[in-house]
Image (cartoon, rainbow, N blue to C red):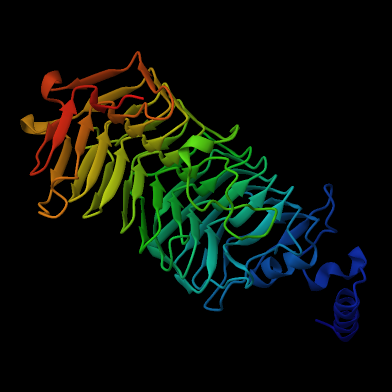
Length: 463
């Protein structure tokens, strides 16, 4: 860099610090080329350029090369105070991150972007080989930690190792976006990595982990996205509820918030009798990896969604090998709702299927279904395929013996729903099918305590 250009860069930096703006001619200091307009976007060519995006959050950008962020901690682009509201086209290139930094605050943000609002991000591949161990509340997303009115399309996240995300309190972790809200649309994205999310603390320290989104709410949509067969997500909450899904951990619009920034209300825990109108949708998605979870309180785990109070349509949870299917499992939990498509449903599941190998071990309350663990909403035109090699059912619900909980424990297993719960609303299951080597034996159960199981519904509750 020549002397005159250095002086221009210094002047530009001082102008930014003082709240001023810089001319496009000076921006060679920050990017490879361009002036940040739609006709001439800035060229992003290296890790330094990536970090400079935060200085111009409303501009247009294109990535012109694969970028390795190196060993230095990568700081997310955009914060709640200064969100990224621009346009980024990765043009099919890759970003490799080996060390994740986080934006500090009431909610800690980690990802390539921290907070996006009215932005567009597309055609980008990200590889993350790093972990996080943070105090307080945490949002993590491979593309963005939190999003508001953002379009994310044709993006993929991969990892050669587990992405461990540990939080002292609430945790929202997703392969693409941690917390997606207010009209955000995710389209044609995929997750091929492994996320192990853990939250510690009190009863409000909820854990929501999903292959695409941790928590999906308030008009957010996920379309045509894939949770790869090699991928895995797990959620572990020491005390509070945990929701884990191949596509989304939590899919709801609720009035409950978790003491967060006003633009991203976060759920404490669902109150099934007081749900508001929901516009969130997930459609035409595929899940084929491993989904698991653990909580000392309660857990909902699903091949597509952990907890759903909205719409899940045209989805399938399956394996490309068609021999075992995706694995939905969690061990030794006191209360668990497990489903091939949805763990706990108060919304609508429509035209969706599961070829899932469901494995459960619990000494407490169990609701396990080929489609949904507990249905308190509507299940319409869904199919469970019990792929049973060598005569063995692909649906196995095991109970460990606990003499203290034996009298209070219930194990309910069904080909469509473990529990069809009419205690608060009229739950419905219609036009559904169950297939297996022996249809009447498509569901296999074992138990030391009270149990109920059936081809379609394990346990039907009445108002």
